[in-house]
Image 1 (cartoon, rainbow, N blue to C red):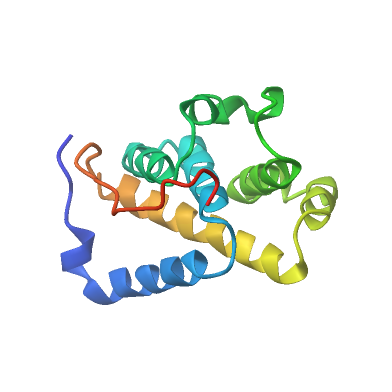
Image 2 (image 1 turned 90 degrees about the vertical axis):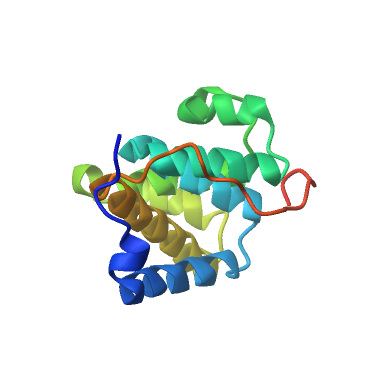
Length: 158
């Protein structure tokens, strides 16, 4: 696959705006391991190879286990995710697929039981951000494989 264009160079202001949202999400207080699961799950749903590659590598760099990464697509059937993670994953799926279900009340209540009001906004902003990155990466054919994560903590679930 050949990239269509380098969006970081073609419109530095647009890239800066997305990077600003990403910076906010990273510093929102949500656990880095949770953010990586959210990013990876939305990227799986959207079929974004570049982002799946990136967030699998980032999750590993943060100490995520292979087992949890392999089973993320089937998280409902796997016993390896906490209730907080399950609520975040359900929310991620519902917001990513908003046109299909309009985010059901039951999923909101599940998430609200695990997250404060502020965390709900931050969780939603994380889903918005990764869906934006997915759409940019897919539209302009970002090529997976070369991404390498920055040095990260090796503490599991940090």
